[in-house]
Image (tube, rainbow, N blue to C red; front, side):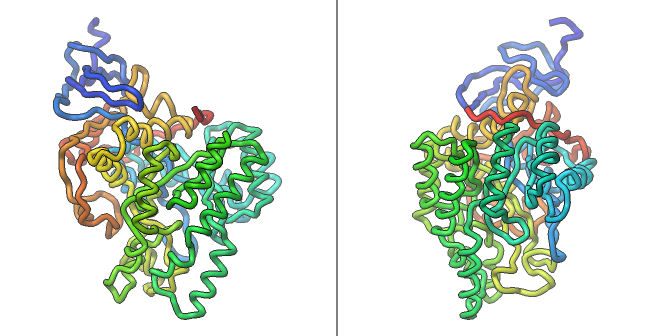
Length: 473
């Protein structure tokens, strides 16, 4: 190798794990890309000894919310700086949050606003999903196809929440645009009318504490909407991805559809592996502390947790995301809106988890619940492919970005919010002990985390990534 071919970084004795392979080698990096995989590579400008560690592709979090505009005086705690700082400290090197359309406004305006929020803030690379809340004829005919061509090839639709939900006919129209333009639709599947009816009954009976959130959104509500979304996808003949699946009843619908040869993909999240309905009944603050764990769909019970773990292992799920929705607990713009402790239906939905996503799932590897290859597939390789970022992201290969995380598979860590890097004042996983933790994290060859310590990279070093066509295979 000549002088002009010198390497910026060499990671020595790496135990490389991808979605399909495992091998030992040195990794050579130049100009932010992996340019060599081999033995006895020439000296690099910087050298890291990875002996005893696993070298994994940086995580791709395909479902997280950062600085998303909120109604009624609410505010997300994490902007693109604190959110991406937390992400990389947990081993994630690419995030895909949502540019959300407001009813009566354009999608293009939402995208422009979201770029303003991200630029100069993100420390790791990012792409955008769209949220389609108002599919007017102009949006369907012009705006959405144009944005897909410009690198926004995935978008989310909601079957619940008054300010976001689409009618069945609108869902079909959006799916048709996705089919015609080669995009992927993500679906939040819960039946809005069932939730509204149950909520009115509970509130009318004075059952308003956070724990009743789960009773207003039982598994049947998710099951019905999941089946309906599958039916829509079958009618239009287009793939969809059902997001944040919480338990066995929705899983059964997805498995049924997959068994019929339909391209129904699915995602789950840490809250459905580690939290239960009992966590929404935490005793502190006269029962209101359970608001910390209010999310939709809600956590269910240990039997459903076990079903989610099984579905991760047997291939029902394609991706494992955080669904990071960062609202502070003790905050009038967060879980206690206006400084009050309102009825459950007014509690902002969502839990933080962008930094703990990978360690919580890796603990499943340590406990023999899934393989290392499945871990990489669910957290990096598959989301990079589905969301049009592969092979730049999602693997360790020549030509890929040098997004590499060196893991200590044996390090035991007790999760404490005081040690995390988000801007939220709690974690729902407080006190949980996990085995396996990221030690060194590289984004395009730059070490952003060394020995578990954030290195204060320049805010704004993260690059926007226009997404290509989804790769479903």
